[in-house]
Each structure stands twice: as structure tokens, then as C-alpha cells.
Image (cartoon, rainbow, N blue to C red; front, side, top):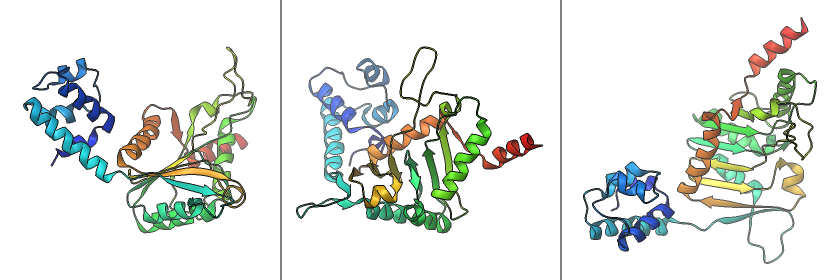
Length: 276
């Protein structure tokens, strides 16, 4: 069996490494310097820990097993669809897929970019799971960019109250909710920019990641219109590597300070102080 540490390495990197060893473009025994020199800079410790000290034939055998295991586990994406469906259609319904994802969550959920209008019926299974399990749930929502002369804390508090009204009317437990910090920069709210005005920004990507294993990338917002009247398309991807990569991309925004968590109590205190 291939070393468990190779599970951290992307399939494309493993394929690249195998080709390089087979063509004698990278010399063995492998070390960090040889990997970096060949352009492999990510997961170097995982690779060298699994292959260091082995001759070429052994490295190729280990890589072949790792790649074969991945091929056996790989599932093709499922087409997810909202709207009219012809007789030959075989797509899965968006609402049903979301319900299954939320009901099956065991550890963590990331939900990003969707608009909410009557979205509570879609999110109710997730709230039930949070009430019965210790789930790490993080939402990344699009907060409308601040208008010129507007008060930011009031604006953000309004966005939070709107989220509670249209999406999370259940009460606690609540997900952690993050917004793009650029929304606090007054903009023209137009899709144009100049050197002096950055223009309109939007957190527009739409996806759900569950337990670092399943990902739904879909155009359908959490609205009745999107789930009952619009034609919307998406893909359900059962791929741990892709899902971890997608989750990491969002979490890196937190680490880099590009998004910030909404603190409703702090916002309320600021608004009340302004009223005095």
C-alpha cells in the first residue's frame, strides 16, 4: 500500500513526479533540494517522507500504487439541476442534493456566495444537524458594498439582520458568517473601476463543501425562484483532494485577513452608542 502521507499530494503532482523519475529527469534517492529544483514546492515533506532512500524502481512502484488507488476511488461528478427536465434528463435535483449534503454532514460545512430569499427551508436540515452534532459551519456571504456617506457598522448590522430574516430564522446555534472586507470601502456600486475608484466588488463564487470530501458548485442561489422556477446548473463532486483544496482556498481568506467574521454583539453596541 502506498504511504498514507502521499494522500496529501495532488494527483497532478504525483503524475509529474512519476514521469520525471521514469525519464531520469530527477535523480534518486530523492531529497527536498531535488524536488524543489524540479519545480515541486508543495507537499515536499510528504513526498520525501514516502520516497526518500528508495531507488528509482521502488519510487515508481510506490507512485503507481498511489495513483491506482486514486483512480479506483475517483467518482465522476454528478450533474445537479433546477428547472424543467426533459424525458431523457438524468440530473439530480438541487434541493434534494443540498438536503442530503446537510443531513450527512459529520464534521464541517463551508457554504459560500449564495443569495438568500426564503432560504430557511433549504438550510433547515443543516440547522438540525448543528443542533445535534458539533459541526464547524462557516458561511461566506456577499455583503453589498458600502455606499458613499453610509455608516459601516449600521450597514453590516443590517446585512446580518437580513441574513437572520431570510436565511437563518431558527435561532442558535449559528454558523460563523464572514464577509469580504472590501465591502467596507465606499464604492460606486457599478461594475467599472478607475485608477482612483476601485468600483464594485462582489463575493460571487457559489459552492458548498462538506467534511472535506463532497463539493457542490452550483449557480442556484438559496431562493425559491432559483430552486423552483429558474434553470440552474451545478456539479456534485465526490473527490477529497478537490474538496480539501476548495475548503482551504476559503479558509486561506480568513488567515490572510481578506474576509472578517461578523460579530453581531459588537455591531449592536456600536449602533447603540451612536444613538446616544
